[in-house]
Image 1 (cartoon, rainbow, N blue to C red):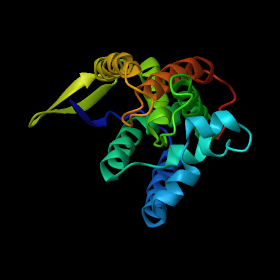
Image 2 (cartoon, helix red, strand yellow):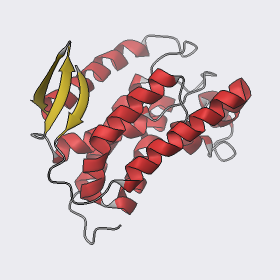
Image 3 (spheres, rainbow, N blue to C red):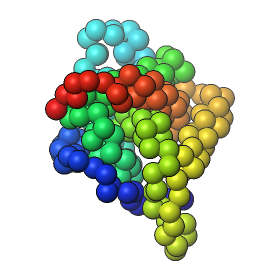
Length: 214
């Protein structure tokens, strides 16, 4: 079940922040490709390194959320941001949205850190921040129609079902990943869960905030 679009008929603004985040992610990934492992080790979030020196390594809380492990990782994340980010940005306003996005990403990283304190495996990707966007979307637009690809058929489903299924999948995968050694790389499911919950909580405060910062 792959989301490929949603209903944007009620949008009132151009999602310039979402577009800018997508552009920055693509640009950083190209730099990452040229920089290789050295770039990844310097700018990715490494739990053990951060635990040893939180202040000195604090920049990686933000730099890591603009890095990706490959083209498929980048493409999947940017697809979700392109589909769901514009509606959330339209509701929050541009300035509030970028603050929301970064806070969701940082919250996701800290949740993942709690389950991998001694890990030397680099953690990178926008998934935690985008999970926050999904959390806000399901709260504010639960009945919004989302176009999903089911096999070769495109059909419409309420966001509550599409994103609810996504969260359930992350939740059970996250429970399973707890049993896996912290020295094993893979998908940071706990970051997805943490980002989603952070997005829900932040959206409760931001969705009706006034004045709307732009």
